[in-house]
Length: 361
Image (tube, rainbow, N blue to C red; front, side, top):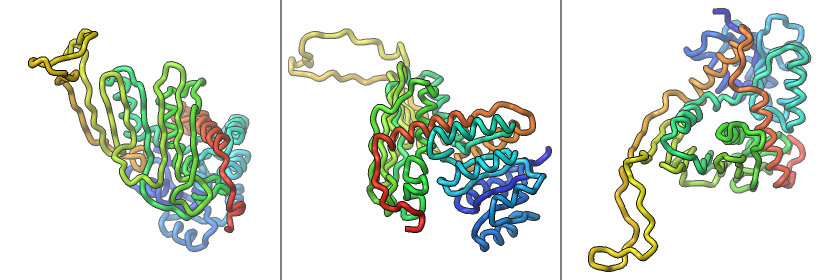
């Protein structure tokens, strides 16, 4: 199998510890990192040591004269995603860009059009669509055991503080640009990416963050004949026992990133009770409350893999098949652009004061 020759821009947490961790893992037999771009000299030196035969550069413009690169991974700061991806596309490179895709829907659409014009592959690293937390939840919904799905809650909460660049609005950061593409993407997926999906309520605020970007977000979405989706990101939630919870007409499902459990009833096993128009009484004639013991089924299982191993592998195999065989991608730039539309709408509904207008503090 021919390996794709890669250049990776950025050796931070994403470039090194997510993408790089996969490229160096036993799962990977389709990619080899030949070039790294990193501003920090120490990180360049470390990259050349970690990737055998790799050459490191200080600027992505130095890649333009190299003719043997099959794919460039753009893991720069979020506010650089658009400009760097645009430059790479116009120089004829296939690109994987980290989330968020860009700051605005206009920027996303511009990149999609440019990729089509230059005949290159553009993919956005939204690997959660290929992770068990999403794929297994979709499977459960499609099986119909929960009945008619009424509501889905998605929580990416915790109890911790941040004070790095991903707390700064000027860096295209804050919770919904940083973490949000994952739960918002799943929310849109549960709405089948309906063209009529809309944000009916949102609130952005700050809690524990040191920056000016939100670390509290509540977003309610829905579409005609679709469930209500409740998305929450809260850095001050000390009690959080699930990531996704589905309430259907026949039962409830909840999961973390590693495991799911479900309780539901089966049609026919609990015959419908006729409506009684008078007050209920027990055998002694005393007031009684509606009470019965339903026949309830329970399921639970551990997920195999996560968003940081099997999903990354599935994502890069998808991109590999697109580049080498022209196969369609399951996770498209158009899906990522729709996510940015939602983020843009939430910020429009909740303008936050810019307290750090530059990246230097």
